[in-house]
Image (cartoon, rainbow over all chains, first blue to last red; front, side, top):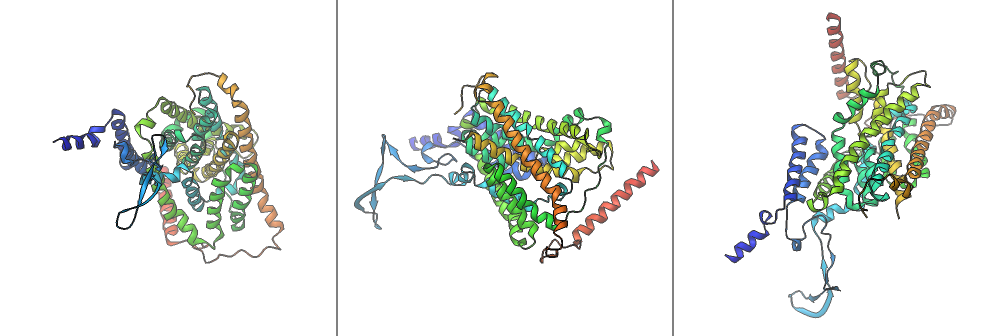
Length: 407
Length: 92
């Protein structure tokens, strides 16, 4: 009977805390949003299930979570030793340092903790991105830069709230609307905030169709929303091949901190556009990116253990994240309106909102809002230009913040 | 790593927040402006070097100039939908 009672105390029911229960419900909500509402299912479903798994309580000695990374065992302030045994399990008289191998979840989380998964995802993103629309209308690249105002405005807001500069930089990058970039920078600057930052970034990316339209309509007039833009020009194969090489050299020389993310992205793009490495490009944009997305999403979700996640700063991070997206959207739209003061061929200011690099959702939102005014105004391809430029801009912003704030 | 969380604009000045933000934005804009100039210059430079560069050709890639069956179907569907919506507009 005592054994049974002791066992019951070690079950999830016996060890459950209110915080764990709350997080399990959050995870189930994410799963429901992914399946029922089709909100970013490729991200929300792994993250949601990871949240559920990560919040099942267990005994500390069992070391089952993402934070149980193992290592040398220390007992009573001293490194623990254990007897070395032979094949017959008999002690040999010699001893070795006792080592705890850590949990499987910790090994999967290794790719997040040390910033390995985000560059691999960027490789896949590069292999699936078509920069033609950006190449055909280079002035739209500036809208991608303007949207990064959200990153730095949020950085200042986080400093105001008393976060350290490193934490503020990691929170600010949520405004870049790029999940892998946010995870990469958080792992470098503020690993203890990686869970809430990742959840905030991916949650708001899924909510782009809700957050952006009111801001876009508030900042534009009906006449501006009706502006039709000239169809993009044809881009030659040579331009598509040269672009990733030139763009990488420019960005990496200016901001070497962006080298890892942008290097992988432009490498993937070159694999795609060169025409001689179609197998590699195909692998990068399908099986590789899918495999890494599964591991990254699941382990990020599992890292949101209630004891680490349900802290006051998480709420502030969520509030700052919403601000980041709103400011980035507004900055892109306003910058487009400023550009129109100097341009003969006007830009539809709605396209500025696509500088928020939630590819391709924010471009789709631009298309949707534009078509509410004029069903025959097709803005999607124009919006893809600042959308992909925003990915470059957010990676450069991350590189700058890492260079300035690290160490 | 997390300082005590209080709201104060002094925190910005204490950590040179404005300097970091302005510098960061300038660097982002510089990078993308240079990329924009490079993109704008590429057609002209490639045009000038046209005589020295090898001819463009497809390298056994799937992305050939002929549209695939899926692309052709997508174009047909798009045209049909467009024609339908134009017909609806005419009849009111």
